[in-house]
Image (cartoon, rainbow, N blue to C red; front, side):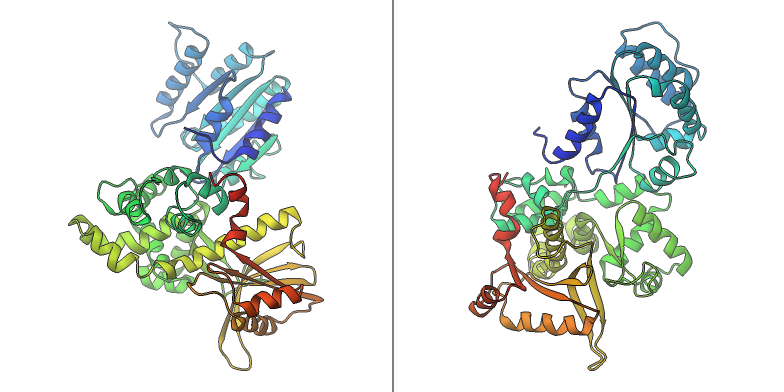
Length: 473
């Protein structure tokens, strides 16, 4: 299987390995995001021990870890170590002069079974490991635990790490590297369903249509993704039913905390706790209007993972139909007529990711430090106003409109964006206006962009040019 994406992360890990000094590398990110794949690629052709912890008890984990160590050193007829400290000390003694990688995958399982494990590691690092060449990697999927208990200021390991990596799903450009044999538009449509998780993207078959790929991956009771969100929640939380109800409410359009509480029948304070956990798991994200504080009462909650969003929109409510073999009807009546509307929010994320990439290259007229969506009320007309994306560099602003429509974007869209920017207000030295379009632009808009430097345009060709440059892989 070809290793796609994560080249920068792998390069950085290899650079640190070549230093041949002690490393405590903390790797975390939501389940299925590709952490283990990255670690296995990193360990290739290196002296390493790779232990993936299990949800059993401490005794069994220690026995299995001991077996991995003895197998690595070709030892036999030895009793399992009586403690984690003895196991780590044994490795340290054997590897004092030689570089070695030790991976503890699913580390939170071990730490939950033995809360003193973090203190044991701290003591070993301070008194022995820091003087050697061990490359110790602690990897976990539960982000709340990794950020608080491993990286947090109150953690025994605080200040001991030499590097950390919060691994996130691929953006659209890395995601479509997994997708061959489709048009540019189709690639983005598939990204809208499968999201940025490599394991899900690998379910896509180039010889099949979008309809057949979605049917085969999502809509059949035997499909790989047919129950995936439910299986994931059962793995991650103790009350999967409540969490699934909250996700379903958000997918159904409830975006404010009180709306979600009402739809699920949960107490508001409890509901916020559940939402907080979903945010820690990387399934839900919180959004406030651009320029407002994190504590804004206008906060909205959305699903950050497109696979979850697609599943709860098109699979969850149609399972009775799908169980009876009505895949064709669900596609024809539920998915295909609505999919363009569904792609609207996906396209906004794509445009945002494009801007982030361009910004990192210094390829935009501003070097922004903030980006987000904005919504508010027009004080004159009392209408709700939304701006898809705003980016800011001090007093210079970039206002964006993202259109996933089948017609070229016309001048009225540009005119309306300018009007909305006035409603937004703010002290501005310079304003730029950028239009994103699935199907290009009218002659009037192209002329305006040619004549005025503050008008910028990007169609699908522009959004995917870096992918095209590497052969569309």
